[in-house]
Length: 169
Ligand code: ADP
Figure 1 (tube, rainbow, N blue to C red):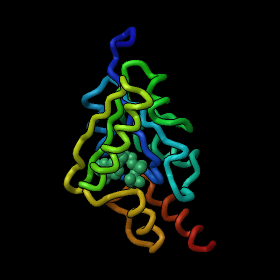
Figure 2: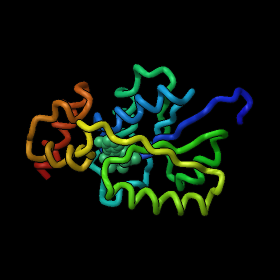
Figure 3: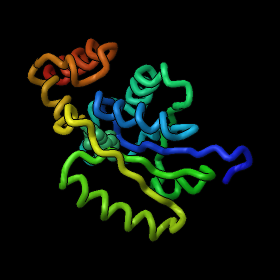
């Protein structure tokens, strides 16, 4: 335990961009833990990201502003190493489907090898967001589809604008 016995959850991801599925997990985690750190991982995206790290952080900040115990950070190191620096922390992730489970199980084993103290906990995705991912949002945006109900409403205009720029290139 750290000095003030605060229980800290780290919610990691690429958030390219943040979706209502992510936000649902962050909100539920914030109800359970004293503090939530949303860690925007620099190297998490395999392909070139749609949004820069600064844009992703800014969008996550605005989307989580109403939660007083949530803060946003970035990391360009391995998650297991990042978590080591934060006393009394656990990783919290969302689980959508069996495919998520296989990947997460493997990641958890690797993280445990690097940092044996580190625990990872999972919240099951809300039924209405089971099929929602950042890649679905990027694809929908590229086709000019309506993003209502997929991403925080205050971010829709800029995601649409970014997709418009990408279509031009
Ligand atoms: P994505 O898979 O959407 O590209 P990230 O890599 O940023 O997103 O994912 C970060 C975390 O958020 C992962 O633990 C992932 O399982 C979780 N997550 C992503 N989308 C959802 C969703 N719709 N419901 C629940 N959890 C989700």
